[in-house]
Image (cartoon, rainbow, N blue to C red; front, top):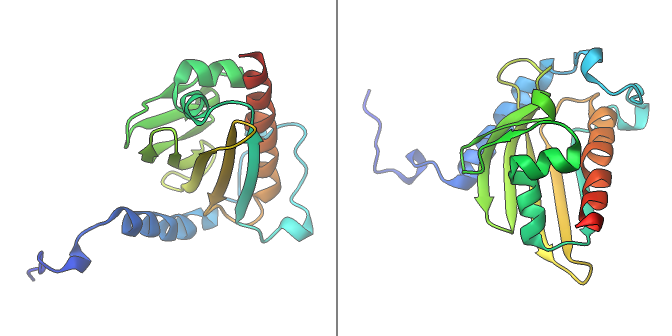
Length: 182
């Protein structure tokens, strides 16, 4: 059977690709709720009933740094290790692989718009192979320095509390401290 390659529906746009990834992630992450306890922080508590069904995280945060410095801190392995306190290997190219927190988090850079946007396919190493969620950092200059609109989507229900704890304690608090020292 020959596919009609001239049809617009056969071309993969960035938006189509992201939509397909998110749809695939939703299907694949159904089994991801069995995260290994040894990989979770000791402070983590079981998902509370109000958050049990939540499969997205959304933040709007201000950072006292420029969008350029924020962008670099997320995509430069040395800076990432400096603010997080854990080793990172980051290929800062679109399509490049990411291994953060000593390999506990892994994924790929899906879309990179320098100093404005980072979109990553992202997964804890404890999830089933092939199960990914999507993280989206949108950076805008602000009076404080940078306004971050952040979304984490496509993870399985029951994981919200653990992931929310991780973003607050492994990213936002250490980043604010890191930028206050630079």
